[in-house]
Length: 142
Image 1: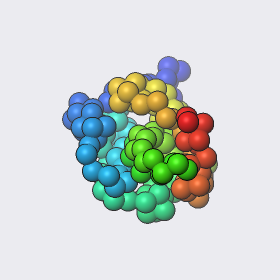
Image 2 (image 1 turned 180 degrees about the vertical axis):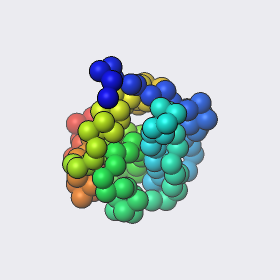
Image 3 (image 1 turned 45 degrees about the horizontal axis):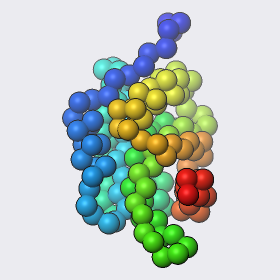
Image 4 (image 1 turned 120 degrees about the horizontal axis):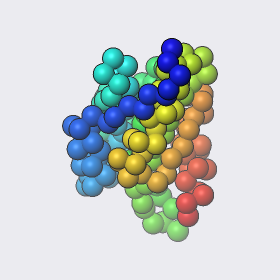
């Protein structure tokens, strides 16, 4: 293994998709699931989901591999207002290969910058990825 950390570029078509996703008009929860193509050292789209809950999304995550998620979440505030925060979630499960974990961790900031995201969260155990967890994290931004 080399001593320098490889930071992966973000696939151009994925960057376009993330830009469109940011300005989507739908009011349902939606997600973009991304992974790193290890051979190309490129962050690529794995899957897109419309109208998906965090419980359903949690089922889509691989058990022992990191993933990046951009999640558009319909949040109803205590006073009745509704907002749609765009959340970046880095899923880095315990037990994944160290080199894979390093590549994902090292590439996270580039992806966050290219997608222009501000609500950035990390989860080590997919079971923690619940609506209560997300609401608790988003409470910080109010």
